[in-house]
Length: 99
Image 1 (spheres, one colour):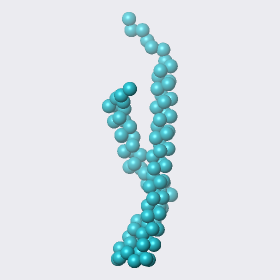
Image 2 (cartoon, one colour):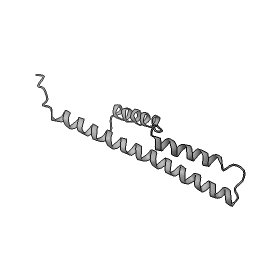
Image 3 (cartoon, rainbow, N blue to C red):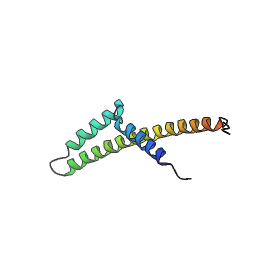
Image 4 (cartoon, helix red, strand yellow):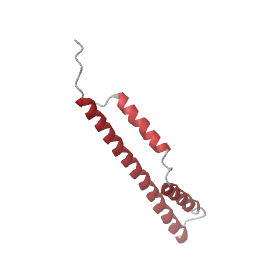
């Protein structure tokens, strides 16, 4: 079964909407701020101390990305459940006879 264009467009619009609101949560904003601060501290060479700072930045960066991915996943699950419920409700309605 091929996915209709209107459905693909609707899903892309929903994904774009979710991503545009991705740093609404306090935890995600805080993780992004910590990541940016850690990344900014990297400049000036990569000795042992800098490498440690890089590792701290990378940990925060990956944590933020995990939070974003978790949020996208959960929104996708919710959207999928709503779509399934709507399709089941629509499919359970008796079809009208237009003859």
